[in-house]
Length: 110
Image (cartoon, rainbow, N blue to C red):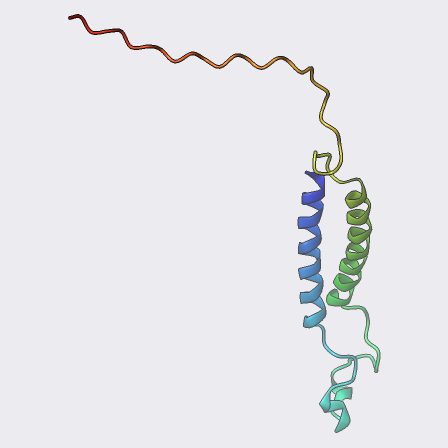
């Protein structure tokens, strides 16, 4: 149960990480910087402070790595099942019951 909850949370973290990375603006590699228009976007010089998106990327990246490790550890143990290699509890073999005799129809009166 905990494995499936962790896997669902991991999928959500992966989707959020992809969204946050795709929403970020490039670091000066735009076509506008080739023509001199790239300097107007940064208020305090070429390197701006950490934005909300860059912090969210860092948090999501850390959650991504920790989630991968946690799923790897939980996947090693796995849920206990018969398919996983556990033996069924030993039971005593009882003799099989005798098959039931079919009922014979009564003779009709003559």
